[in-house]
Length: 188
Image (cartoon, rainbow, N blue to C red; front, side, top):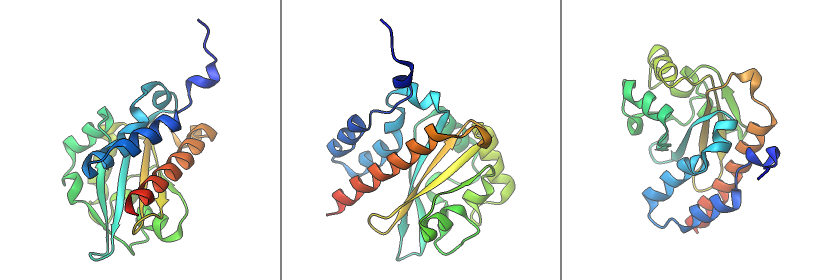
């Protein structure tokens, strides 16, 4: 059976949307958000996607909190060496030197090849880089979410920045829009 190579690297957004909408429990819903892109591993592998993280704004505390981390090998490798547990890492909302805060405030995607910009000021640069190196991540992008009180998705790739192209950009844009729409629907 011949397969069209252009369809091998595409995500089934309808199936992902249905999976997210069908998840009733809140914690399971958040985990589904970060794991859904890996449910059919071939498209994720073909775009070199290694980790997805969901973050949400806590307006009362003035922080950006890590809510869910994909259950991939790369994610496990970073949490195994992290100096601070995943859920304890909180970024001040107004701290523009962190690209997560900058993406949320500006409403524009941000990217980096250095995880110090994803973890500062909560983790020192050397500790953030140990997390990144242990997971083999070369590039990360942050896409803001506007639903609820705001938030973001982090997409981390085991591919260099110069090799990130339309496939990854299209996926991140479409997936962020899908997640934002699904989060908004659950809030109402």
